[in-house]
Length: 107
Image (cartoon, rainbow, N blue to C red; front, side, top):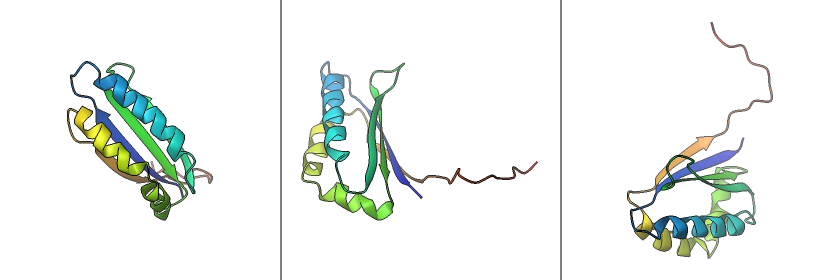
């Protein structure tokens, strides 16, 4: 099954933080989508709160993160983004559910 990470980021109140985070996320997505065993690397901004961002990283399996973490670009990401945040990144790990088969939903 597909291994997925979601990361929630929240920009601080400095005037240029939102634009800087947005640019870095777009740049990162363009880089990371090329990593081996990466299915997709999506970046989003909340429609109601422009300071809130989400990254969705989809990998073939959990061990696929190895290629992502070995990418030299990785070393530039946290040092650039962390000072622009109001709080720590909220990272969650998921195993996507198999929706290809019929299921019986308990009553």
